[in-house]
Structures are given as C-alpha cells and as structure tokens.
Image (tube, rainbow, N blue to C red; front, side, top):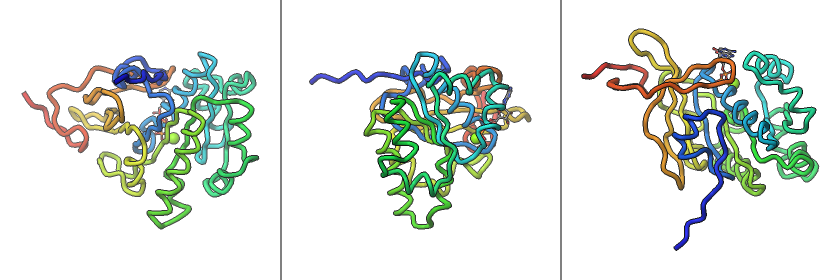
Length: 247
Ligand SMILES: Nc1ncnc2c1ncn2[C@@H]1O[C@H](COP(=O)(O)OP(=O)(O)O)[C@@H](O)[C@H]1O
Ligand SMILES: [Mg+2]
C-alpha cells in the first residue's frame, strides 16, 4: 500500500508547524477555537501572510471587522494587507453570514468570483460562530458547516475556520458543537492562569490523517503574530484554566 504524501502549508509559525507534523494538510479544514482577544484573527492573518510570502494567494471572509480596522490592526502586527491586496495575493471579503451563505452556491458570488480569478490556496473565515445567528436548528447549522467546508475542499483550498468561544477559560465549545466533528483538525487557543498570571496557550485537539503534538504550549503575540514558547511543564489543569503545579 502506498500512502500519498500530502503537501503541508505553513501556519507562519515554525514551532506550530512542527506541532502540526509539518503544517496544515493541503485541502484540510481546521477549526480554531478560542475566547475573544486570544489571537484567532492574528493566527488567521499569519497563515494568509505566510502563504502570500510564497506567492500563494489567500482569501479572508470576515463578518467581524471592517476592512479598515483589520488593515490598521494588521499593520500593528507588521503586515501590509493593502499591499498584498494590490499584489493580488489577498482578498478580503467583508460580508454578513446570511449574504455569504445564500450566495455560496451561486456561480457569481464574491467567493466564487475570487476563486475563479485569484485561485486562492488558503482561506480564513472569521468567524463561523456568526452562522449560529442564522439558524437555531442544529441540523441546519451542521449542513451550513458542511457546505462551507466542502466549498473549500472542492477547490483544494486549505481553510481555517475561526470560532468564538464564549467561555474564557473553559473547554466547552457550546454553539459550534457539531463543528469539531466535521472539520479535519481542531486547534484550541486558551487563556490560562499560571502562577497568578494570565497567559495564552495553544494545543492541537485533533488532526485527521496526521501525527501531531499533544502538548500545550504558551505563546505570545507581537509583531509577526503568534510566537510559540516552550511547552508548559509540571502544570496540571491547563485546559480547565485552573492550574496546579505538580512536582
Ligand atoms: N502588535 C501587537 N503586539 C502585541 N500584541 C498584540 C498586537 N496586536 C494585537 N495584539 C494582541 O492580540 C490580541 C487580539 O488578538 P485577535 O487575533 O484579534 O484575537 P481574537 O481574534 O481571538 O479575538 C489583542 O488582545 C492584543 O493583546
Ligand atoms: Mg478576531
């Protein structure tokens, strides 16, 4: 039996790539779940900018932030989104979940047009939590998630789906409950309290078809985006947010 070696796409962070067994698997969909301000949008931009740096175009579908705000915030992180847009390496689609969903199947939707004209290899949706506003039916929501993921998979696009986690230091994913099942991979970003200080931590919960690191690593956010630190050692209960030193 031969195993097809699948291409890996860099996250833009070396250590995270190693944790992912080399990077995100081409054509896979990854759920990135975390509380507000933890760094999901930053990671999404880092992923898109890493692609753009290699000449791989990307698309950002955002329901959250106006392009002007996004461009300004990205500038603080050292990324010139306007330049990337004019170079044809980035497309920002600022829309509403309803409009986006109703146009998803249409050949002349902004996403379809972007796929046709720019052939993006990477996509970020910020955030899929907004789809919960469009329906209260969990089956419909699951169908929405599937059609979104499939729209990217059909084109071989590697996607990050950002999800807002209402709980600041909890592991429950609440309203996006079905998403962890329909995506290939799940990254958790969390605020954790360690030695009476709030830190940020990331772990890979699942990654279909790949080995991956099981550790929980702290990270900082600065110019250039996320920067992973050493794994936490001798600390228990990180994902619950209530930690205890052991040993
Ligand atoms: N240039 C920067 N230097 C340091 N930290 C930054 C910088 N830009 C943003 N941050 C941090 O990143 C956080 C926002 O991250 P963001 O990706 O918007 O979070 P999320 O999308 O998960 O809500 C801010 O709370 C801020 O602490
Ligand atoms: Mg955000």
